[in-house]
Image 1: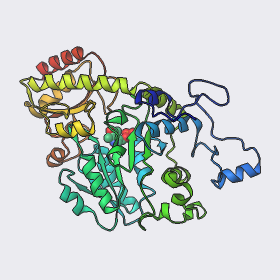
Image 2: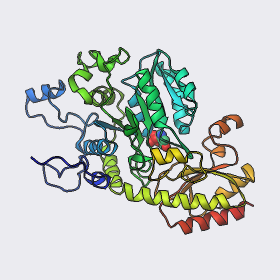
Image 3: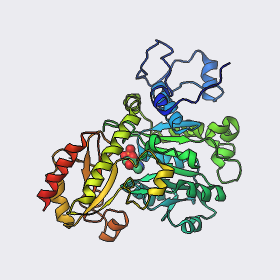
Image 4: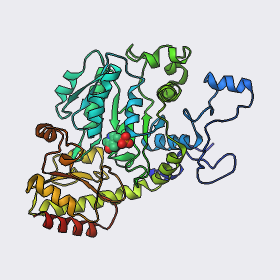
Length: 429
Ligand SMILES: *Cc1c(COP(=O)(O)O)cnc(C)c1O
């Protein structure tokens, strides 16, 4: 037998999880537009429902197109298994669901996507869960925030809106010492730029809506499990380490080993929460991922050129991009995402709020939208849109000061992007 070679990223982004279709030989992964699957006989059906045999029952749980995407995501992140779901926000709930009970909390970074801050600070409470937000550059504060009811530490690798890289190795050391899983949102970096599991992450969550699909067509999410966390080492995770009453007393960590979390997320999480990814969306995301590395290289190169140009512009107060040599996070970038700092970043205009509004309205090639990670370049002025409901102090804490604009640099010609920014900065005065 020949030894299994570890394939490279560019190979896995095309072949990971996707064998030729066993029924027809179709080379591209077909869209299995079906809700259900015929059982061979009553015994087969009973074995599937008892999880004694793995197979397809109903598309709320599993679907072959979605399954191919799950295999690809696990391969790209270097995980044991993955579960896809309907959005990045769904992925965050799906990741927490097996870990939490009423009264439990998570320790979360203050530097998170705005929607995640709202989900964690407001909606988690409805489940009896809570989040304690800490500055992840203050390692003492992270440790101090952990108590006996903490069940996870949550951060982003490259934080949205950008310019900040979390020291994942330091977070993993703290999580290990406390016997807790580290959950990393890797949306902005993608597995091409950063592989959180190699830095000690237990779970990696994604909004596939962004760079993974890459062209603004799909809302989707994913949870990848490293398969390395011992859920039975303490009594903190009974859904995984104890007989699960929601699954006729099955003990997931025992029955499925490194796939315990993944099986629980499908058999209990998707079954009862229902935040399923549809096969059409999975197909678009599979197509997008085929060119992920090519796009990310271009996104990063364009973002660096634009950031360097903006940094020298007289109307610009500062540029917060981790890829700039002037960034305070240059050392972390070399260690955590050496191939590039992705293409989302912010910059501040000397002219304040009014200049920002005029600037955004004057752009022609950039689209003013509430999305990011698209092949098209995008812009948003957070203070007048996504962060409009916050006080000025809250806007500042979130990195959305009134004079800050967020860019998501696409893969167009950098010269055309710079020309558009140049005319809009002139118009902003
Ligand atoms: C967009 C985003 C999310 C939420 O994802 P949806 O697919 O919009 O639900 C979560 N985290 C980060 C970093 C994001 O950029």
